[in-house]
Image (spheres, rainbow, N blue to C red):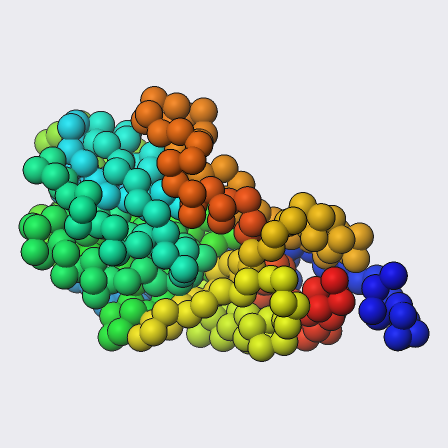
Length: 376
Ligand SMILES: *Cc1c(COP(=O)(O)O)cnc(C)c1O
């Protein structure tokens, strides 16, 4: 019997999904439909006015010189490494604890990910970087996982000292700041995803690259369109990673409301942070000098499976980001890592649990989640 039941209070089971995109859509429905309708009526569906506008809006938002819209976050990352000349035999220092796309962008260029354990903020542990640098090291990949900025001050310091590139994976950190700069503006290239569930999600796949480097910007805008700048002139072997007008129009609308979206998510996260007091759980920590955005609210629990099914019984949906770290996936058998090689990463993977957090989640729902967690 839970403490709640023993205290004689009747708490009705509420049904709370882990995530839903519908409530956000309903709130801004007229604007989204008008923007999409405008595209359909225009007769231009790929790389036209909406993409141009999006690229201007987004580079201003992040604070960089260039923004190039692409088809996905993975493409953004893949093209980032390619445009920096990171290729076969080169080594990239990358977090062991991340979503697999970060690593695939490295290996698809023929480069080798040198995996590094995370710190207590779930981002790459900067104290472990210098010892891993060899004469093959070309770049450091920072992933701002869950919306928490990595320690960019230190990463830039090390990159400058050893003459390395810095690529940022901002797929989960739209609008997060470390010190005075937004994530994406720190590195040589910043890579974004607008996959629907991301904080700035489109209604399908989309991504973008931001950079202050003219050459990189120019090359990526060419590579995303078959290596062509002028119609039917092909300068190099590119790919098709063009951004659709409809997705760009959707992101433009969402960006115009991003402050509300960000503060709405922050309010939920803050309620969790200040009110969850179950001593068996580890709550997220916020790095000094950083302003995270809340993409995921991730807690850690020993005996996670039991805790998770308790929450499920209470009607609360949760997810695990991510249950298998890249080095233990079948896809990366060939990297030569084994179970036990990254104990912190593996421990996180066994203990993390993401709580419901989405635009339109009501105060009642958030409080119910808190109450159920504290009663466990
Ligand atoms: C979502 C995500 C990506 C990939 O973005 P897609 O648009 O799905 O290709 C890369 N890195 C991280 C950390 C992500 O969360």
